Image (cartoon, rainbow, N blue to C red; front, side, top):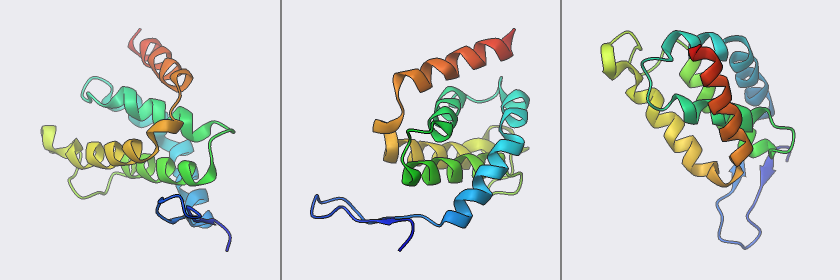
Length: 128
């Protein structure tokens, strides 16, 4: 089955992704990620992790299953309609933070120092 991978006895869970959902999430992220980052840069303490996750997601060497997880979480961050609306002061981003945190934790070994360095550089440029 396309998009399915098992741990083959390694004790890992089955990882399944939907190629169409990945394409949809990737388009959402490509269309709105940097606009959202600019808009919320001063408000979010987890923005550096989100940007590092973005760079991991667009890295050609990142496995498709990891891309699916990260693009899904980043798309949730971008889409204005979510569990807790973003306009609700500090509470509006708690669900976004939880989704991004869970995604990053599940694929942390794929987020490389170069992704983190690119994230810092990008955020520094935005702050100028």
